[in-house]
Length: 107
Image (cartoon, rainbow, N blue to C red):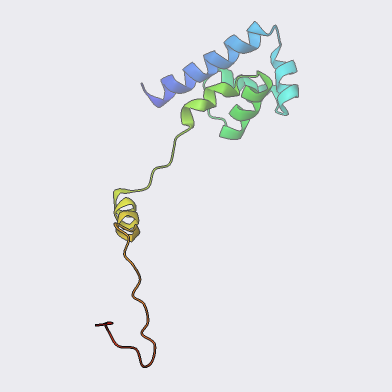
């Protein structure tokens, strides 16, 4: 899909949900804190800022579409290897210190 087609699809999405709420461009724009002409640009698929899109989605109660941008950050393979290297692989007794005058063995 081209950039222009994506922008047109976003605009159609906004227009569909605005009309579904029986709201005029003026009402939605005012509630979102933007001008009516900016909302018109958005609905026509023209260039607007991401902040404008977020404001409009918030007023339309459609911020759920932003969920597709969530991700779980995973460490890189190199970072994982470093973590594994630092991890203890087995337990060992710590050597005890010899006291002065003690023999190594009791025999």
